[in-house]
Image (cartoon, rainbow, N blue to C red):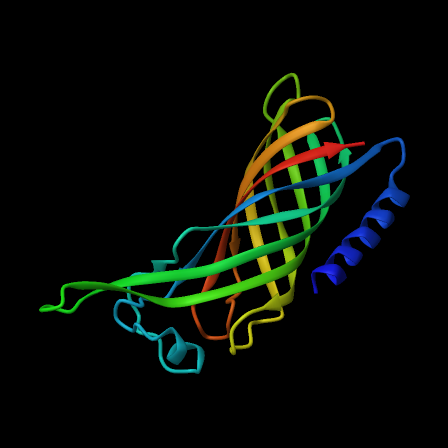
Length: 210
């Protein structure tokens, strides 16, 4: 599956390069992905499996999955104008939803149990606009979104085949060709139908332009 994803990204990069003209630039990017997720109130209904099988979600204050770390890499093409630049990205993204809860058993004390452990990979097609925040055009604010297509997953449940994410963040040009950026991404579609589970991702990436 990973080889297939790399092939898709390479093919997309060739398409990106073929589009690049004098007023466009392109390159590659990759980096660390900090993962979490919005979960239903599992302190009231601590069976994620029952929720995924269609049982009711007990309404309450949303919980958050534990923080995990994965990676993301891909390519981009961008068009610069007087206020900033538009960017089109193709990314291979790996993510994980992991959560443990502590239960007070009384006589046996507090025990910790894992309630959810699932891995996913996606092909993202992200579009953003990036507004320059300094006169030197070396710092920018990002806002955008992406459809993300499921490539692989673990677990017996069937996730939704596509996620829709919105994001915003910041970036800084280290040199004319090298950029470091980060953003907060929220999946607005449920990972599993009627589960109330949504991806949260914070990629920290280095981009290299050509």
